[in-house]
Image (cartoon, rainbow, N blue to C red):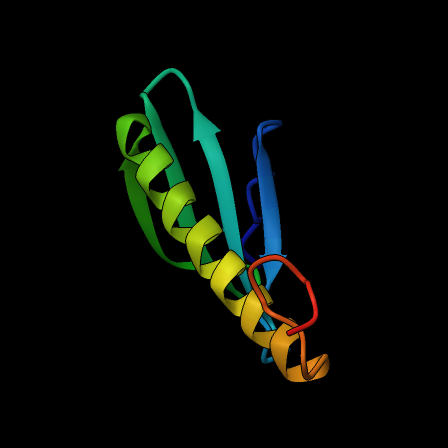
Length: 90
């Protein structure tokens, strides 16, 4: 049986929303100047992507913008009569 290497101290694991044995590992590698995103299935790395640290802010901005957009849309659908941008009644 293959041993799964421990995630570095500066890393995180995210479970797949579909459930099952899939996970995303994100780990900082300061010595190489990259952040590694890797897909894991049942304790085996199925693929990885090395992102230069200079590109991390663009990825974070993209995720933040998507989160804000989805949050506003969800809030608007749950609270009819509310404007998503500022939460004030129409």
